[in-house]
Length: 537
Image (cartoon, rainbow, N blue to C red; front, top):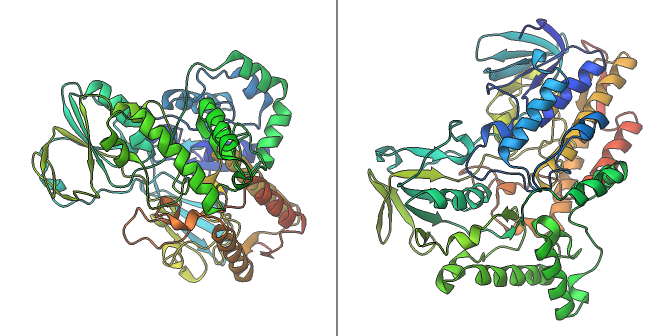
């Protein structure tokens, strides 16, 4: 699409964040354009097309709230929308608000350099295009760069290989095939039941078992829709003020350690029957008290043993060695039941480590497993991967990748000291991946756009996080994380899934509502902690 060579705002990405940014900035009368590596909108839901891909938050809550008309006209078909429906929704949004005319597709931003003399960003794409913009907003997503497989011998394998984060858009037919799946995180837990229905044999190579709870998915209940719409404004506000950005968990202040064993069991049973993340709201002390956390772990382990018929296989699937919920809790449709199928085999790599991939299959310390295809379900370089892959340079040529060499440092997860007029949507140091991403995205986009408008009204051209404010925020993020059990797991929240990545807990664990209040307070105090200058300063 054509656009001016000089813009008010350059946007990188056209998923949930980029689309809302374009709509909001256009409404402010600002010139804005987005660049998107894919050939369509959708971000996460454009790229992640593996079998069974779907959202793990109830559909009506995982949607935009900025337009009453949009909410009135869109009807979800399932309790948890699948990837095709989510992509249709985002295409509908792009068309309804005529956003495509401000998006260049099939184009990747490769660099963004700040010019101190002009106070502007020079953005360059892989097509050789160069753009000058007053502000640059990274709407690049938290789970958008796949973690690359690096197994000995993988280049020798003669069959096709697939990564769940880069699934072929035309789909894959596994009929009659012997398929290896390496990994048992969220994408594996969603895709394995679907692959097993089609393939002749599925061999799952598990490194670390994950906790998963049943979705109890189905057609969306008309009564749920009716109740949601009858109180929609109130529900949306409750989402914004909640801990996780969604209210279907029905959180309580009750403590697990203060109730009887029977009362605790009944509480968990009710929430298990409801399905999804309802179990997260069962007790207020689950993520901070090891005893309470063990209660949740014991209950979930018992459910795994109920769902898996072979007791030996069930024990291999029971997570050990890290607290319940400290790796992202998964929501599944018949995941554990899939291990009851005769064509499914589980290989525990803790007992028999993976030695190498051969020309014909996968070899462990004890056996060779001949397969026709391999699926790598090994996750993403989360939160920082998309940003550090772009040549982003701030003052004095400071490279963001170098600045984050020991782990990401931000102010509010929105800006980085030394990088003026560069905003991030749901960056490290914000609730981000611990929350309903759509709620967090809307809050960030609103804050960024309000900030840009405020600067314009005061004839200010440059805003930058102060090093002191950034240091204080990083300390606060760490302090809050240290009060939880999250640090005790080798999770992608800490970058532990990517070899060589610094071990730093990246999201803010203080909750969506608390974080919103902090951000609003900082803005109300004339952007406290930020250094403000006239344009070109």
